[in-house]
Each structure stands twice: as structure tokens, then as C-alpha cells.
Length: 110
Image 1 (cartoon, one colour):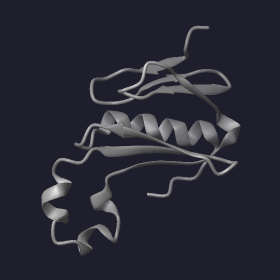
Image 2: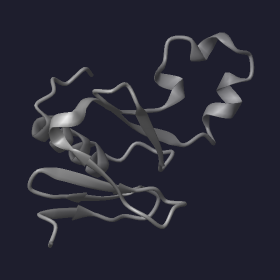
Image 3: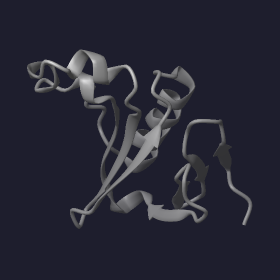
């Protein structure tokens, strides 16, 4: 089956949009994982320095420069999947995340 749309850029997980589901392949893994749009309850694209508790540590400033951003998918059964993404914010990937949110029928949290 040919994907409706595919996102495949260096430093990001490979994402394939299908009619009723999507597939994600981590940068360091060889196999795609499938998710039905109806099963997803939350999608997030963040960096740890965006969290309120991050600034509490003395070393947080130095460590934040090298940490990767995270793309997180949470299913209705409570299982979450985290994928590393490029450490710099990329609008192109953020647009893909917005498309996920729309296809899953979720509301934008940020």
C-alpha cells in the first residue's frame, strides 16, 4: 500500500501517513510501528528544557544544548512511545505533528 504522505528527513523518525493509520520508524531502528488514528489520545513534540521542572537543576543549562527533542505518542490503553528527533526545533516537523493532531481528532495543547 502506497502511503498518502511520507516524512523522511535526516535527524527525525520516518513517518508514513496512511488512510486509517500511520507508521513511525525510529532513527535507530529498522522496523516501522503502526498506530491507528482512533487509538491515539495524545501527541507531543517537545524538548526537556520546555518543561517547568527543567530549570531547577544547576547543570540544566549545559545539558540542554545537546539533548534531542522528543516526539511522543500516547495510545488509549496508556502505552506511550517516544522517538528522538533533531535537537533543534524544525518547523517542517512541527507541521507534521499538527497534521497528526488533526488526523487523530485531538486538540492542540501548545
